[in-house]
Amino acid sequence: EVHADAAEVENDLKMHSCKKALEWCSLNSSKLRRIDSSFEFHLRQREFLELVKNDKRVEALEYAREFFGPHAKTFSLEIQKVMATLALQDPVNSEIEEFRALFEGGGEGGGPWTALAAE
Image (cartoon, rainbow, N blue to C red; front, side):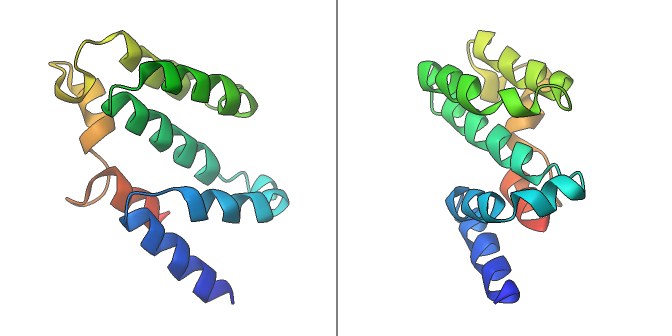
């Protein structure tokens, strides 16, 4: 069952969806906390960035308010960085590499979704 769950989560991420992975995180939250996993935060970060990418800034701000709080102490710098994308006119094509990389980087040529699936 564990391997089936992992395959399902991985396939969902490759389809650019965090739904199954977040469900899995919810079911395994105590185990993830014990090992100081950053997986749930990275999923939340990706969902936020996808909202920004699709120019849904109000929804992104609401999403951040709802889901970034529990991660604020551990990931404050990362949260500040992704929140700054809201201030950019076109963050996906930003002249600032650090912000542009949030939307295109991570993983060997596969982008951020491949990097998440590898986690």
